[in-house]
Image 1 (cartoon, rainbow over the protein chains, first blue to last red):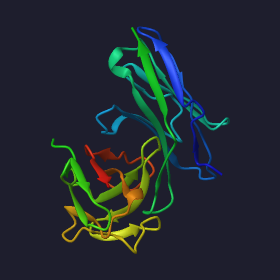
Image 2 (image 1 turned 180 degrees about the horizontal axis):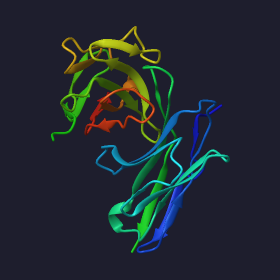
Image 3 (image 1 turned 30 degrees about the horizontal axis):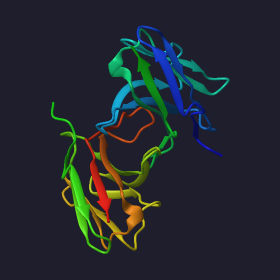
Image 4 (image 1 turned 135 degrees about the vertical axis):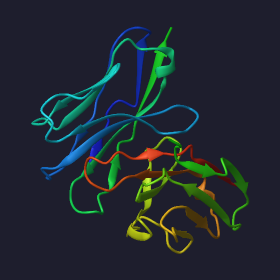
Length: 116
Length: 115
């Protein structure tokens, strides 16, 4: 089974509107971390936001928030007030909490295009 | 604080040639990762180091890929001989540790084209 599933290959959003990028995950661990990264066309992976499995509140970082629904195993990224510079690939990732060999699992990504 | 540094940024080689990539992690980060990202896909972990020891290299094609992190800081990834399917972006990342909440920070990547 896929550890991270991103079902939206591509998304479009009007500038200044909000957009939600979907992410579901699969783990039997109690301790895990969920991450979102942005990858512009330049290629660098930019860390956006983190949610720990024990965090009761949804994480927020500026215009980014993570809608964490533990029972549904979903960790959707919400971008408010979209800007043209938000056009990029977005990757959801998870790290499980067992020992030191905790691998990062990435989804296949969602391409976001912001329309002026 | 300086980020993860990688070089070269771009490399074009012919198949069967060898190539090496260099990575300098964020100062103090004990864990270093090399990923391969093929166009249109998410990054795939090739190897993970904890200080200068290998923690996970289960997806590293060991017949042609090798990596080292001799002094627990810089790392090199080598491909010898290269194949056409090795064309990809090679990303280096680092983190303080490898716990569930440890964020990985990525370098700019090396784009490799094998002709």
